[in-house]
Length: 204
Image 1 (cartoon, rainbow, N blue to C red):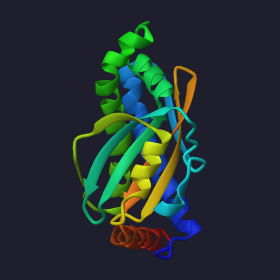
Image 2: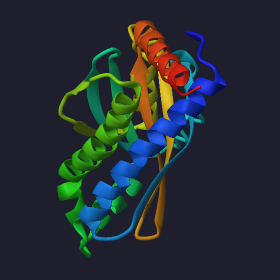
Image 3: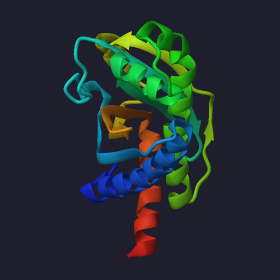
């Protein structure tokens, strides 16, 4: 797969962990409490091989923040949490004892802000460390079923690869897990490997 090895995946995990740390600092300022975000591991697979198990998707509904990035490689990035987790995160961000119904009114705006913080922190860390520039679109948010999400990720012949970051998010001691998914074309994945190789060569 474009000569992507465990060394490349380990490098990506380290890079994205730096981005996650930046995102945690930004979120802690919003919620007024300690926030931890970690990226335990990264995997890259063919989009046709992605499954509910890969993303830990159950039969419920999920909040998906989508953002597009362009530069040396182009990617569609999707941040996924269950809708229940998304509403709890919104509650932590709002810092109030609102009901689920009341929180739902702020769900779209708050999740777009969360996605913007996490996605841009992770991608800016990659751009800084691998020495390139990325442009990004505004984030969008929708709630969808697991089947709808899987169909969207698989049904894209122009982006046959999926890079999955498994995310652990803790806000005010409330632990949440999610996934950050990048849809990549063959050319984008090849360009990413080239930049990682240049980075690894510079530190060896």
